[in-house]
Image 1 (cartoon, one colour):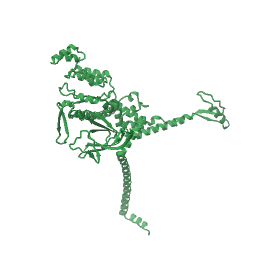
Image 2 (cartoon, one colour):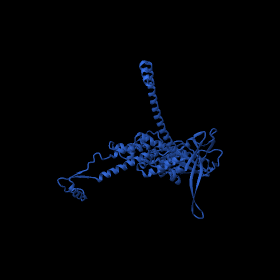
Image 3 (tube, rainbow, N blue to C red):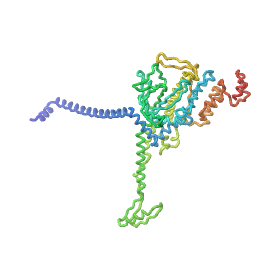
Image 4 (cartoon, rainbow, N blue to C red):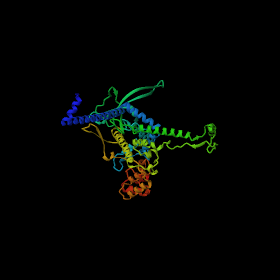
Amino acid sequence: MGVLNWLGLQEAADPEVKRLKSEVDTLAFKLEESYDQLSRMFSEDAGWSRIGQETEKDLTPEGRKRSAQMCRVMAIANPLVARAIAVRTGYVHGNGGIGVQAADGKELGTQDVNKVVQAFLDDRGNRSAFTGAQSHEELEKQLSTDGNMYTILFTDPKTGFVRVRTLDPLEVTDILMNPEDASEPWFYRRDYVESRIGERTARVTTRQRTVWYPALNYDPTKKFPVIDGEPVDWSASVYHTAVNRTGKFGLGDAHPALPWARAYTSFLDDWAKLMKSLARIAWRMSGKKSGAQQMRSQLNSLTEAGGVAGMDAGTQLEAVPKTGATMDAESGRPLATMVAAAFGIPVTTLMSDPGQTGARAVAETLNQPTRLSMQSRRDVWTETYRAILNHVIDQAVLAPQGPLKGGVTVDPYTQQREISLGNPDDRTITFSWPELDDTPIDQMVKAIVDADATQKLPPLETMRLLLRALGVRDVDEILEAWTDDAGNFIDPNTSAGDAAVDAFNRGENPAEALKKK
């Protein structure tokens, strides 16, 4: 008797054998199911591993450089990416841009800090490199493509005047952080090609250079002359502004939009080819084979619209049906939506088109998420300005011929220098941005006038709000023209005699008030 037959008889004779065989079959099935689940899990982990490897590759110096170069090209060559960057720049810096006002010291009876700040902002070189409208547009585009902005500050050792310039983000290859605090940068490494013109031959020579710059506000007691064999330039300091930060560096806003911008471009290219091919075949002729050659010659002679073709009774001429052969251009809209999502703007704004199901008002509306996203970028610029302007004030105090006076203390814990002015309010810097909402000017002016009617606002503050509402850029210069030496507001509607009386009542020279008037 065979073994299988014997097991079959045993199973029929003994119920316990039947039960054990059923349990074995069940366990075998569960084992196969677990194996399948593990196989799928390992497959998914392999996918995530590949994603992680690609991400790490993007964060290497070569990966960041490649990403920035691709984003720079797409910002010029791809209309969708160029439009998205232009929209972001307009939201952030448009309609007047940032306004800066520091304590002028007149009302406080202390130092004129605002004069130092405005001199820095109005310097020709500083406006060209950082504080002007054109530089704001260029640097905002740099944040969109590179994700990093490096401002380098040069200080006159005698007067303390600060000049600001920017570095190419591709030249900054490494950041040395505080080993005990990963959020505190100490040094920035710059690898660049230096070009020089010979004094005798007038020939241009180039050489590769590497320089370390200290971070802004990093001023150790012991200053290293070299790091890893490369020199340290202590005459300048660098402030780093990064967006979409991953680790020590940032990534451009355009980085996640690149594949979708390419996909949308490819879709439109295919759609245009299809439309062109459909346009070349407009008519279909059917009939007897004997008259086909004659009919083709008559059709070729039709060069103008509205022509007439003579056909025999057995020949039929009809337009080629387009049903089922067309491809709707709106089908690619989800691809454009991904590009808009990468830049934090609505797709209706990106494409200047509400689409087939939208309305024109939808395309012109700035929704709350977009408003908050643009305000967040403005806050990044505000912090950059605040850090740089505080450095400007500090250098005006530390320089031997600096225009400001103050004291220097050393923090016992961080060993960092702290510069204090005579009055804590002298450090107050007011930053004002135009409203993101498209509020009519008459409504804003009415609100300011109503607030002024409460007599709770100082006259200078009322004038400042009115000038900002009207889009005036150099607000500080106008305010300076309507304040006296003591910081008192000169009412434009007050006569010269009233101004002299008011000056006399304040114990001032009436002649000076008349001269000011």
